[in-house]
Image 1 (tube, helix red, strand yellow):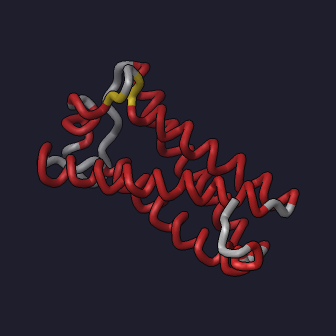
Image 2 (spheres, helix red, strand yellow; image 1 turned 135 degrees about the vertical axis):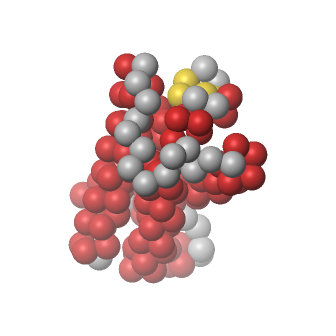
Image 3 (cartoon, rainbow, N blue to C red; image 1 turned 90 degrees about the horizontal axis):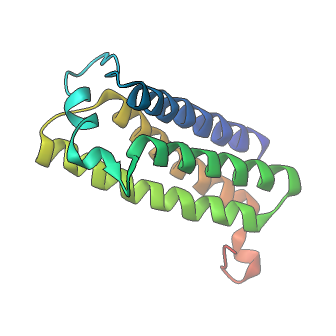
Length: 146
């Protein structure tokens, strides 16, 4: 269990760094250095890059910080409830990632390298969470996560 939770925490930290870098670049007024694909600026300056007045990258920072917090709390306090909350947050993050991938590939027709990292991290968080949930044995409490 310790290894899975360590991987989970590391993934969430990588996601936090990724979204933090994009948030920094957004507020600094710079475009990020696009390492592989050429579509970073198109994606990050599009109308879809802001939700409710805040950059999507800042929402990503909040998402990854919440995942880190609830996972760490779950690990330290052996709390199934905190792990359940982390699971709900990761599921929501996964659904948003699918939506953002759709926007990149089919609407904007531009690919953001950093967005792919975030989506990949969220996917791996989901897989790690499944392993953690199996070891925590949520089924003991009649199948409830919370």
